[in-house]
Image 1 (cartoon, one colour):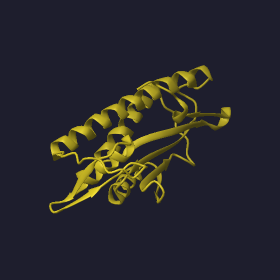
Image 2 (cartoon, rainbow, N blue to C red):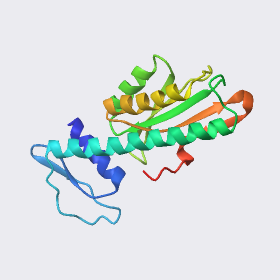
Image 3 (cartoon, one colour):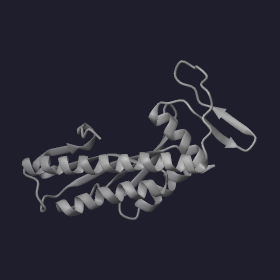
Length: 182
């Protein structure tokens, strides 16, 4: 069931029309915005897993590229390994349990909250280091991005963006404004 929901999620994210198997005897059609019925795509669980793996790999590469660009921008603006930073981040996924479990795991080191967006039919997981600050080297920053992407993937979620603030320097850096071409 989880793989099917994740596949439906991928279909919605990619904006294409698919038919996803919900149970052995029941299929649910997802139509495009014009409500045009499309031919069913018979995908095996292996095909669905492959699609997810390809999507995750692309997202992970994009997050790492964003991190490298963001770190370069931070250095230009005077951020270094000794600068105190506050970090906010966001994940999303289609399954409530996965969102809650991701938040639970990350709550060991971060303040976490989850919310459901009815319009997007998606769960969001928000985290922060606030009210505390941390310092980080470039190497550890990249490792943090890798960890966030990988832990999200382990719960069939997506690490979507983050914001880094250097309060003492009055500087804010946002990953979501970075274009990587990936």
